[in-house]
Image (cartoon, rainbow, N blue to C red):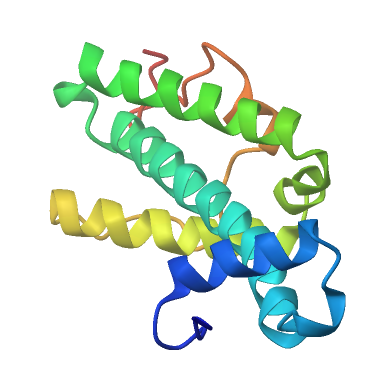
Length: 150
């Protein structure tokens, strides 16, 4: 049976892998295989951006809700940093993303939206005030909004 991409992507993928491994190159679905390969890269980029947004949101909450700082927030910050570091090690081409000003601005926008939704506050800077080195440095936390270092 010939599986179609649109009908059953899992069966289609297994069939395409079989065709590739058996050398039946004329039978493969080149266009959809190329699309899936591109999607793998996009998925990795989305995962990195999502983790960065969560990290930035927790750093924002740390700075602007100093009275509510908790070990839970610290754990989340630590976990997101570790996950980002693993992504950058396992997929070195993603390192250019974290140093791209537009990419960081998008992640910042997502982080601000998350933080507004979770806190009800709407007093955050339009642009990320921290360097990427600070953001990704283990143990670094932003100064609290009243100027005190936590």
